[in-house]
Image 1: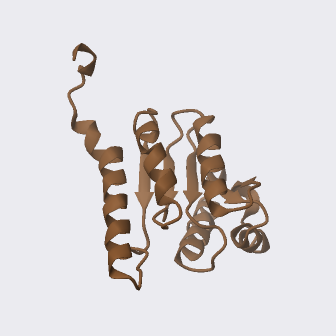
Image 2: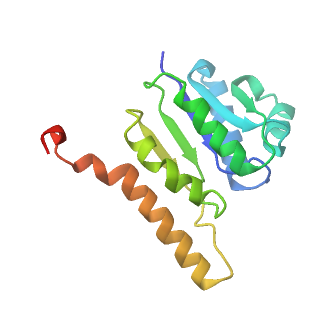
Length: 159
């Protein structure tokens, strides 16, 4: 049985990520396929409390962490311990404080053998033009590592 693992970028905001995630979980519940989804949340976060209050906590896996960056790192570690047939959905992970971590793990994620999906609700706009461009560039590089490398020849071991 395959299970979709969902790792949100920020668990302490009420916004697009939380609303769309709660709608997805509601749909999964209505279709009675609860066993096929696991949402990784930060223990004690706004997201965990909100989903618990809605009765949508059947698919949550809480990870204790002090900061969002620590949560993301621990979440990736937990995901790496799960079976490789479980695909990973990175949900809105374009926050500027996650990008350095995302850059460091991009190669490991790409070559993990796990199917990885990415969903972004917005471009995480910035009031500072150069910060906005830098964030878009770094994120674009991460996506290239995750998705464009698959076009490399399959017999790379002879090089």
